[in-house]
Image (cartoon, rainbow, N blue to C red; front, side, top):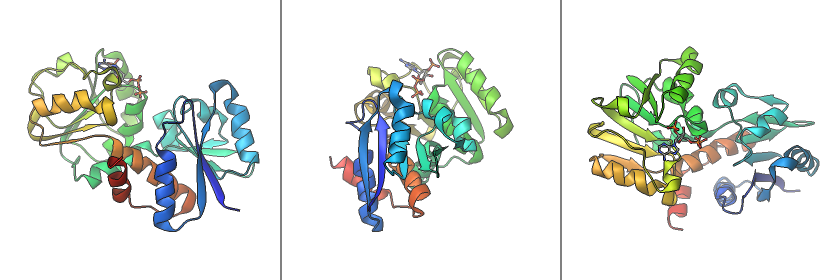
Amino acid sequence: MTDRYAVIGDPVAHSLSPRIHAQFARQTGQALSYDAVEVEPDVLPVALQALHEQGYRGLNATLPHKVAVMALCEAVSERAQRAGAVNTLIRTDSSWRGDNTDGEGFISDLHRLDYGVSGRRVLVLGAGGAVRGILEPLLAAAPAELVVSGRSPWKPEALAEQFRPLGTIRPSTHLALKGDRFDLIINATSAGHGGEAPRLPGQLLADGGDCYDLSYGKAFAPFRAWAESQGAARIADGLGMLVGQAAAAFELWRGVRPDTAPVIAALRQG
Ligand code: ATR
């Protein structure tokens, strides 16, 4: 029987994961199927058990399940605990093991784009779940400075405290950034989904500075416009991160790392 995998979400019909994993399977010559399964939050525990009984070998969790599945896993990796969310489940004999490949997908996309982090001044905009997922690999990449900024100081301060064992994060509000300069600005807010970019002081981006948005599609447009107005040397959306987190999940399941570039190119063609 073909090995089965799936993404669980609510809604899930829009998910690009089935397309991405089908392309990975073709590329690496692996025989597997990958479904999209709609799971409402109140039936999540039952659904995880049912999918296990049906023989699924691995799952991806997307909204709104990434936090709730943590408590339902038999074990959760350290990086997933730090991120406070699980996006990848690996079958065990009787249950699931949880991991989080979002941070790995993000940092692998920065490598693919040749965006340096080491020795650069890096600003992360936002302080929600998406930010928690990328701070560990960002700190590991040894930036000269890492600033996390929000509209109010509370969430950035809490994140700086939580990640203190891994390195130094300077918490800030957007307004208090006035006068600072950064070589890489990463938008990890959900503002783009409301058609907005975060409101920021001018001249935050150093000459030759790069911008990256964790969003893609329509939600990327406002930050892209802001980055262009600031003269960014390069501007990237988060489609490569999406494919990168999928590639890292595929490797956990199948032991082989697919090449993300052709899959990103195919998705951009529509
Ligand atoms: P996720 O879990 O995907 O990170 P979230 O927690 O809903 O999503 O939102 C992420 C961040 O987007 C929040 O931390 C919020 O930042 P604040 O700390 O400033 O509140 C930010 N955010 C949401 N809407 C925004 C907007 N219109 N402008 C600026 N930031 C916004």
